Image (cartoon, rainbow, N blue to C red; front, side, top):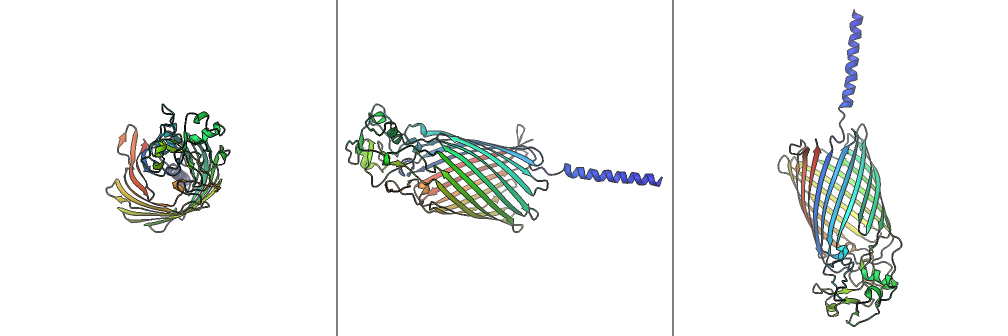
Length: 463
């Protein structure tokens, strides 16, 4: 009898032990508990007077509306796939001046670099798709991910893919990440209209597109001597490939402090200039289409009806090496206040050196609401190949008047409000509202350029 009781005790002990093991497996925390859906939208507006399409001078007004949806799906306890689909519709004054010439009733009717033309490039839609897959190990100390991206707009196509690994150490207090990305992009080149027409007419400025247009020299005298530098030819290499390697080290220093270090190595190859962006040389005679009496007013916003014919498009080296390196330091002052800081130094082999400082101060104002003001300061040196409108030399091998490659400094001030409810008490149909983000920021350069962006995002959980 004692043997039977002993056997029964051993049986039930073994059963309980096996059930404990099953419970451990059953209650393993999932990486993502439920399907999450983010609805994001932003409105962006900018204005300035250094449009690169018109050679570094002219109207830069642009408006952009960008709705995006991101769906994150748990495939099982360890695997998550995220699908990001966005559409960006913009109206650009400078891009519209790819073709500023309107041969209507008045054969010489034209706009100026200060006004938007009615060209097809005035409005465009950019479409993108990103897919990311991640796998977490059983102990959650290793995360592997792979991603794919695709984007198109009227003159550009992009295809990208990448992969990465993150390792966690010291009870997840230390994190090390290594990732790589490859973008195999291609231009569908759109050229300034006068240069495209010059090629079509085999250099004959009295035929084809130019047949009903009068070309004037700097003195306002009719002339047929205009031609782009070196005869101009269409680009042969339409590729623009980017290869990047990124490293990130993050360390929790104390219960209140966290530190991170990162470095990226980015290599670009192919046609790295923009075929639509004009350049003008100081040692080349000027020629115009439009109202010759407005030529003396060309660089003024009073110019409404004359346009400077391009000397060439911007040309830049076919290789570029870019290295950003930076630090993050976050400090939690108390349960209601935190300090987030960021510094980045960037340099490349085109001569640009830049410094970025960013400060954010999240303030918890209620249990579910956080207000976070932010400030960003940026400064950079100019690229070796940049000069303003009509300051470039035709003897140079490379040249651009794109003010993104100029010397400048900028300030950005932002405000945000975030609502978070991990219990998703608010419901919209079968979706539980997990968070709401509202952001506004104003950006201003010292080169007569400023922009504004307003964005809002909603995160829902599928119950």
